[in-house]
Length: 178
Image (cartoon, rainbow, N blue to C red; front, side):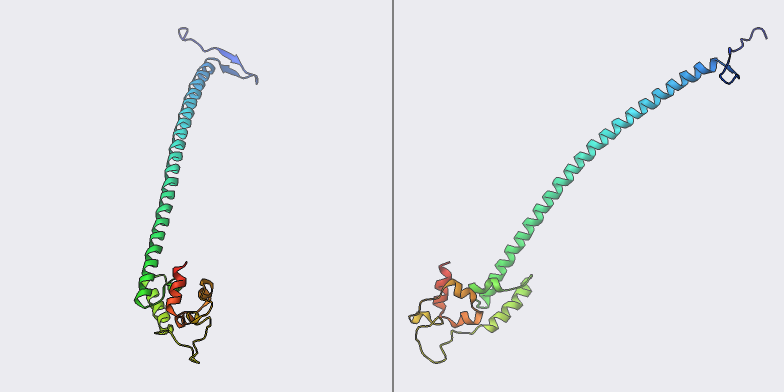
């Protein structure tokens, strides 16, 4: 066994003998392992950065899509409100309800507005009433007979029945002056 080389033997701090050659191999293996782990960590950091950028872009896209969706929803609601208001005016005209009372018709659907219009129309007299005493003297109820005239403020405070009791020409004059 003289041909075989014996490993170098060193004594450790604890007095035990150790093989010196495996230490250099362990160190070399440790360096390779650290480098491999370092490279892997670097690659993972790059992947994380790339994913963060993608996430940021997708977040921006979602934010823009949300804004667009909200704008579309607002536009849809505005269009529905305009259509419902047009329906309200048409229904009021159909039932002989004065323009001044159109905004008082309630309902979220045409059917509801139609039902309300029927109720309002029932409450309105079919033709202007004359004063009970038959006197055509000047009064707020009969401004055409020499009174001071009907104002928009007075008209706003009146009930539909009171409005219908007034001279309709005077009511229309006040409404057209707006």
